Amino acid sequence: QVQLVESGGGLVQAGGSLRLSCAASGRTFSSFEIGWFRQAPGKEREFVAVISWSGIITSYADSVKGRFTISRDNAKNTVYLQMNSLKPEDTAVYYCAGRTPRPQIGRDVRDYEYWGQGTQVTVSS
Image (tube, rainbow, N blue to C red; front, side, top):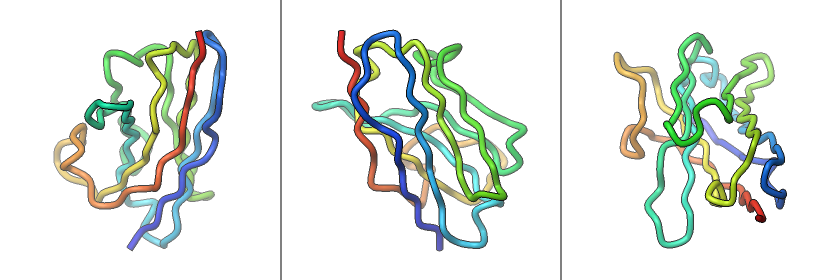
């Protein structure tokens, strides 16, 4: 079992930055693939970024590519999402999710077994 807890959300002006953290409990965290997803009001939850268990492989949604960076520190059982050049359309609740590794990296909500409770990110114009 893995429990995930997000933090770092808040209110920021357009063009600003935030760093989200996803802290995990459980000795198997270092073997988990971790993804970030977000859900805006009235919209479906969507993929943002994912990082492999080793940290070597990453993938991003086109809407955040070049602005967001995902990274992990397995010694601290933590995955980070550095968000730069934030836009009002980035406003959403951000969730981290985990799963055991598969042959293909996961970019779909249905791929993941474990979820955090979410952290709110609000970007003002």
